[in-house]
Length: 102
Image 1 (cartoon, rainbow, N blue to C red):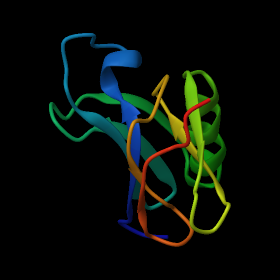
Image 2: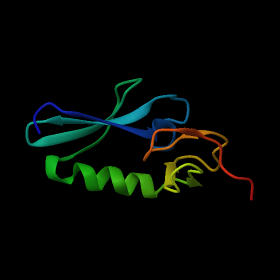
Image 3: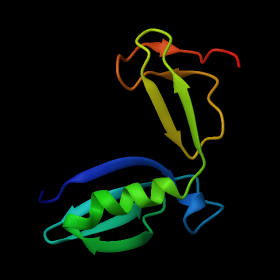
Image 4: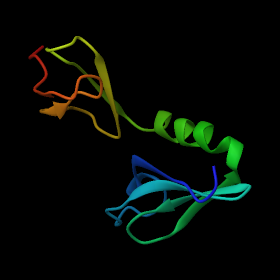
């Protein structure tokens, strides 16, 4: 896992800079990984590379999470950082969808 970049939808605005429009990414550099903003370049956290997936998951759990069931395949889609989805592309089947009304 050398010099790998892991993209996320974690908004930097929820983790340190309310004015930044960027998302956090995981940058793997040898034995260490940095959680960095893709817009302004600020390093939010540095962790051992083996802890990066768990660190990003914990950060996602701190956010509000919207969910939507795909009307095509029935998969549940989770959207950390969102309170509601009005349209989405299914993470399982890839088809565009709008959630069913409650």
